[in-house]
Length: 389
Image 1: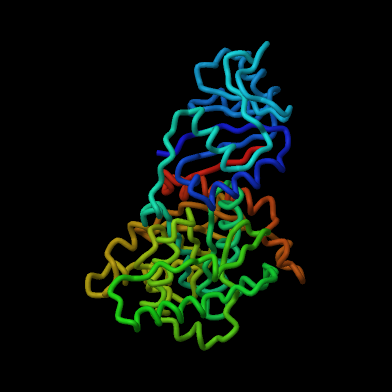
Image 2 (image 1 turned 180 degrees about the vertical axis):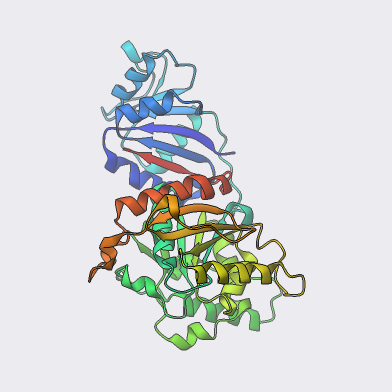
């Protein structure tokens, strides 16, 4: 089980590189970090019911916390004063001292020693520890891609290692994201090499080194494939191909969450998503046609003769998007329960609005609530970091 650590420092810029390193290293399975850069939010958290395994913080944070008399939790002071070995003195007597600026492996090993956690980790994370989320819709123009991208950004900002996989025939995420420079070969090469390995007659699926194929969107706080330029490549992607890609992403030991943005439900790629993903977010609008089509597809999935998995309705959650009024977002058909409501943002209707779709405070607040109520409960043992400023 991962050690629960509270980290509190004055500089918010100290936090992000540390969390990023954790999520992409073997420490991701050993440490769950809740990080703070403001004293008030740190104190509020420490007064809550969750008891961490250790607290590591700047002296001012530790001193304020010790006033509350809760020093039974192991703690350490972060020091940038050069020689910091030993124990602190004065008001901070009773804790350890850790050098604030040192190599990240040394820093994290010191934190692990503080809470007496042995350094051990499996070579890869099991499938159950990588949550695959399929974002699907039975009708067009539902805002599915906007939701998927905001989910990736939100979960990445919370400290999770996230991959955004776009399976639309024509990848519309390019309207929202600037593709970073680099020569990563992308999804086409991954599919080619998966087929090549299969052609060699190996019965065991080869786990490829995903870092060769992916790019990182800093604005999205997530990794992804470069958009496929040849539409034919995407159209020829079969159900088996899609399942192979999903297995590569879930078995890599690299990601906590994979968010899959899908195309039409009748496409083979989407059928694979319905089959493999552990959580399905159905995006609806207030239109009756959206409700009717969603109910029709769920009825089809529930039919034992459809060839679909019977558990599709069980792992489905329903998100009402583009709701003008959260209290009057429409009533879903029988057997469907609304799990989240996301607002209609009038400014998105203006020309050149796409840069606003990932930076709307009102929409972001709705996505945060969706993450808290639907997604976080589905992430046991992998929620490796929270950041509070």
